[in-house]
Length: 173
Image 1 (tube, rainbow, N blue to C red):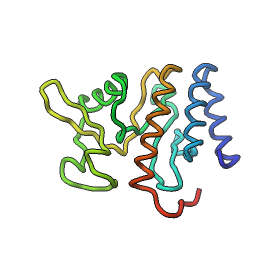
Image 2: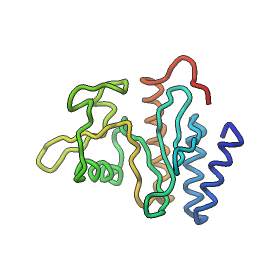
Image 3: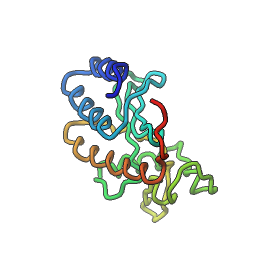
């Protein structure tokens, strides 16, 4: 964490979790920080952005039921486990599914080829569905066994964002 306020935000959130869950979230938050992502308060959640591109890579807080959540942007990642494939499948199979605007009508808010930056899932009938890659997806049942893969996904997404979205000078923190 670069500032005392960011450290306080992190510690305040972690202090509300039971010890085992707090340890998992702490490890992920510290890894985000090592990549240049620090927490900012956004309503009742903490969001993690990098000053080089100002894109959100992760979000944590409490859902409407008061349960803690951790959401990660991993849309530019490929070769992730069945667990993460299921997260994407659930999003594109949900009743509120809408195709990513960049795939549906060519809107282009993000940089990089659309096929490289959106979540993609092939349905059983062969139809490919796309979800907006700028969204961090909640990881249900987050546990210590998830940490190595999540760190790898963070690093892969970070490389993509730095390559396609980073500016010459970082935004002020």
